[in-house]
Image (cartoon, rainbow, N blue to C red; front, side):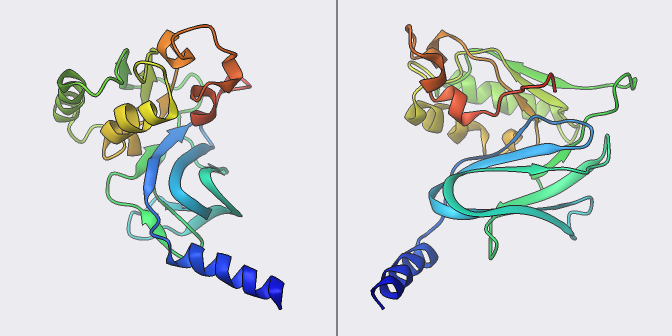
Length: 215
């Protein structure tokens, strides 16, 4: 009975908690047949991505029933160079999903075409210039696809802390371009705590999914 009471209390707290996004959603390690969708929530939940090629009918899903605040779901078996729409949430509700939630899988190797990349460096400082740069790119790009977004480093000033990433990087980009531009990051000295630090312990390596097989 005591176990049931504790379980009931924990479950009730989970159900009644207001779930909000802290990071993302954002797209990682895109290939012709797969995509990783990541996001972070303020409270621990399970993870679910609904997706499909029709925005009004997301007929596929992939998820994880483990409770966590950091969510990383791999979508596999996708069709090359195809546009997919998606939402993120739990196995019972959608946390976020709108017309900006989409991605294009990569073309097959060697496929000729016109591809657009947005390249930003020293971008995470919460300045008027940072916001104006994003707004100008969105205005210039319009409805055209951004095939990739490359980070050149120094993505969150001054020390690359988790708090600085939340307030100076994700808070700026996650409402629009981050939802559909496949993100390929690189670190700078400010992402390394701006000093000599044991590299695997800095937040950068926990926030982003790193390529391990030349994806």
